[in-house]
Image (cartoon, rainbow, N blue to C red; front, top):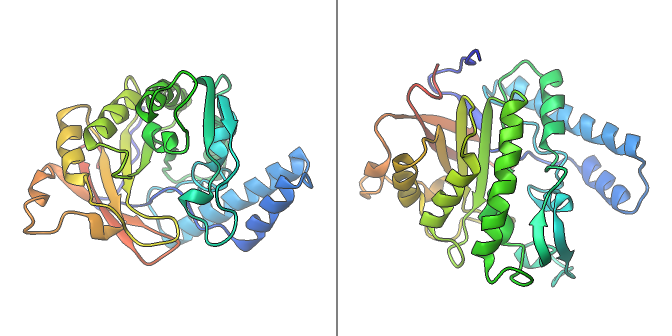
Amino acid sequence: MTVSVLPILPTSVVGSYAIPAWLWAAYEKIEAGGFGAMDRAETENDAVETAIRDQERAGVDLISDGEMRRQGFIVSIFKYFGGLRPLESRRKVGVLSYDGHVFYEPVERISAPDGLGTLKELDYLRQATTRPFKITLPGPLTLATQITKGGPYRDRYEVAADLAPILNRELRALADGGARNLQLDDVFQSFIMDPKRLVEFYDRCFEGVAVERRFWHICFGTLEGSASGSGPIDRCSRRSRASAPTSSCSSSPIARWPRAGSGVSSTVPKSWVPVCWISRTSTSRARSWSRGGSAVS
């Protein structure tokens, strides 16, 4: 495999991208059954092209497809899982937050016999751009936050334990299909997440996955609000570099990155180099660090 060349200080996007008004309108019509399969494919392809061209014009070094086929980070991922029953949303009025999402109840062991849809994203990206790109997936604990205990599962950690091998198979399939840059995303929620467990599940997901660069994005956002929770980025960086190597580990918003003089920044390995992450939906930026010789060819 020829290693793609990136600058010493490469720029990238977190993964998801701003959704234009016309795509929101299309989602509503799709949900109402107003689009056929070809209508939907055409709409999603147009949205991906918009995100790609926008990043290319901005000069972003490592782009994504904007996750335009996913309808909001992880929402559409659940359609690929078997063994889950959707529950009625607890809140349907007002600004979307975590209590407005659909939750799922396990009725049997979770499975995904047809994968998670990312191979289609890979195939289109290879045809649509000559830029280096990455493909992202939500981490197992992040997915488990929208799955209740029940059925064969006593708690969300047991749910995540079954999701990790599913994500591992998807990441392996992407790597076998030619993907060179892969990323796992976790939305940190301190009331149900422990940094040690986050790292353990990250390592399970990437076990045996051979790619040029591996990324880990830890988000501290609140969908429609500001940063929340105390950041475990220092503990995650210590544990992750002690286990399988990670090309880049980032946090967002930037307010949650360890500040100089806090004693936390000393946990970031000196062999890592900064990567600039650009948010399309706001003016915030998040720094990340990538291991020298991995993100820089």
